[in-house]
Amino acid sequence: MSDLSTATTPAGTATAVAHPNIALVKYWGKSDATVNLPETGSLSLTLDVFPTTTTVTLDDDLTADTLELDGAPAHGTPLDRVRRFLDLVRERAGRSTHARVVSRNTVPTGAGLASSASGFAALAAAASAAYGLPTDAVSLSRLARRGSGSASRSILPGLAAWHEGDDTSSYAVPVTGPAVAMVVATVDAGPKAVSSREAMRRSADTSPYYPAWVTSTRETLVAALAACEAGDFTALGRITETNAMRMHAAIQACDPPVRYLAPTSVRLFDRIAELRGDGIDVWGTADAGPNVVAVCRPGDAQRVADALADLAPVTVAHAGPGVRLVAGPTA
Ligand code: PMV
Image (cartoon, rainbow, N blue to C red; front, side):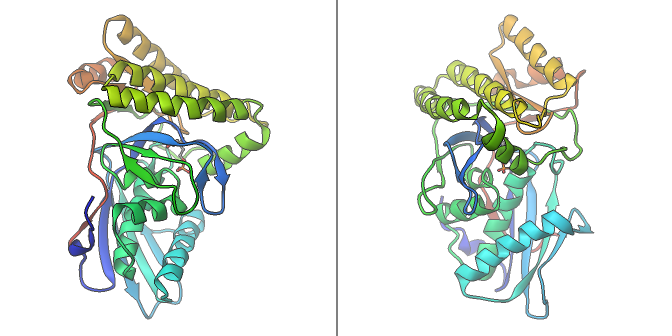
């Protein structure tokens, strides 16, 4: 991706749009929580639905950063996370000015639909442009990673792999693969009971299956990248569902246990298996929440959506764009 800085608005303010991504091979666990390095690499598809639009405006009169989220002032954890992120940006930019951040999600916040991915990808781009940091894809992916690991992948369009490494070398790269569509079934749009941050920590500390998750996922990523290179949708789909089930198995084995999948989620996985029995190449996945994402070929997406719609509201998604800076602040 080319340098995005040409699209910035007047000095000190910038607006960026980013989309969520859904992992085919999941990121679940950190090797370094301070700079957010993953225990294993992961692979995802950035979607063309549910964008987040974020404007960062530097203001010399502010004594602290402010955050407006979906039209209301934000406090607590969301504000703290944005402030910590902007502290990092300021440290790198050698500046001390605070900022107003205005962000609008069209993805249900905190429902396991990766609002943190689109949110921190958009914030990384807007803040980098507003504070004068580099806005090339590698720099933005590294920076977005510090806000939320999965955000490193939403910098890029379509399929992206985020590799292990150190603070400098761990960022997302583009992957060429088969055409993939996703049907998002929203089982519950409310915030999840246990954050992915907490559940990841608990998995590493207490789940006896966590070491097996790490070992198997490293192998799975190699197989998934080979399936992408071969353009083999069916192999990629099978890998996707198996990897999701393994992640949820590791999570459910925490002490105290965490269970993200709801009864309707399980029914959706059953329906997806029935569709496979009917000859449709479709596979399921779910992030840290009850929503289920059916992964299929673009030509089958509407048929899959129709077949799931009586169980949960569905949204058809395809490969979407990487983060971009847009002219002018948001409303
Ligand atoms: O980036 P985080 O901290 O929101 O964690 C994302 C974890 C999963 O969505 C469950 C998996 C993934 O790779 O996106």
